[in-house]
Image (tube, rainbow over all chains, first blue to last red; front, side):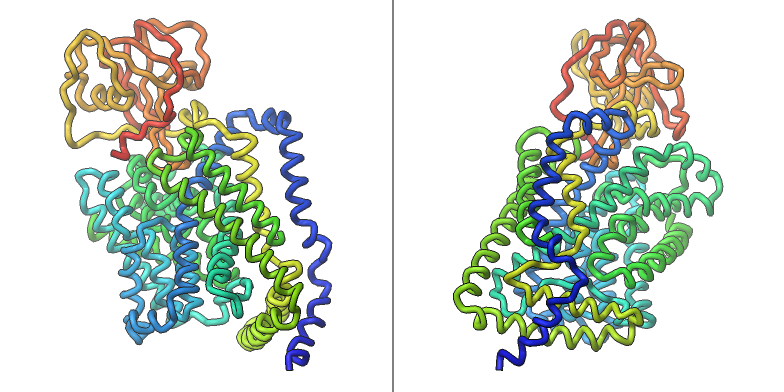
Length: 336
Length: 285
């Protein structure tokens, strides 16, 4: 019985798509890398002593150090969902009709006290656990924007302007739910193609749990590095004068801050303070910054690619961006 | 990267984070309040590394003893998944991606006791590791400060009375707020001591700067005050100085964002040791 079952994998195993020598050598490569780094420590430090390089490195390391605890939190939660919470739980907790499940999941985002790095792996685990993708995506978008920590930070950063907090909450929730419903109408299941994961079938719960944690940290962490490098480059290289040029025209200013939010990739717990300091911009433009940032930025795009696949991220990110800009402009016009 | 190498990267990253969190190194990059979270994250990463090694060894041990019994469930699982993936994937993907995915998944599950195919992107995690261990870049200084507009903000709750006495030591952000928005009312006829980082603009005007931080260095923003009066002819940017002086009504606007930069009339300027936390975190409450 087992022999007939196991025969095909043995054949596939010999496929030449992956050079085997590379696989066996990765600890060696790692040791070499670390050794070269230590040996060349002096020259590397010399090359990095220019102020541009120093501030690049500082911002790069800062984004990583700041995001890691939240990534780890999200990864742990996602592993718990993947291993210990049975799929039937979500079937009972969420309304059966996807159209109703979307707003419920969107509101549920309010209870995840973290920033966007935590919400991506959690949403990934929800999808794998059988939650309607539309609902999981609404959760993914709303969680980093409307949780109490972020809303409190917004209130502190904009003293005397409580309407900013309300506008952020309303606009973010609206975008999240609309994206969920959009996905339900237009989305196709085959766009969601999570990259291959280690098979956890046949493993004990402990092994599956730690395997999931390891895989997610390594995978999403790698993509996080890409986002951190992009954010550091923007912060260290692009002069802020460019921004002032955009502040005068109301339409251009909204678009400029939306793009800035994508490029800067700041944690959603801190973006309100940055928005508050962009005093030359209108409140609506700054609201756009606060709504777009937690939903889509370079680091998030990279992590969404890691969790849901490139096909998905390439469609989802631009749609989210456009909708977030539109909704913030409308909400800003009404509330601010 | 196979699982041994992954375990090594996880262990080193966890170790580096723990080291940074338990010394004052982390204060160069993030707010002080993140320390417990960083310690927890470091511990989890190290535990993940340990668990990876442990399960890896156990898997190797069982398959060495009883090969077929240990691997059979994993393989049937892999077969089932192969079928499912091919069904979902084939119509969507004309490039045969589904097939390679399925094959890779298969190989991964099958090769449980041998090599493991893991995403190459993980190698990038070596970069921040090297940066943190080998370089440990300094806190943001005058370069970033002079590229970013001053973040001085009006406080809604007014200003507390200053303690009595001749000379009063003030936080730079506090002084800037009083000077800019309180017209220096509480500052008249007082000698004031302020510590900060020296920065020079293009014309050579000296500023004393504190970078204010709300979460991590990526959102750090400077609060600047200008220095007039008795200034030494040669000043090096990025040195920590303590300025003693008096309030002056002189102000200027930051060309970057039109923010107010108040001035201090300096009578004495002397170098001091950098504070433990290089950033001003008064916004964090």
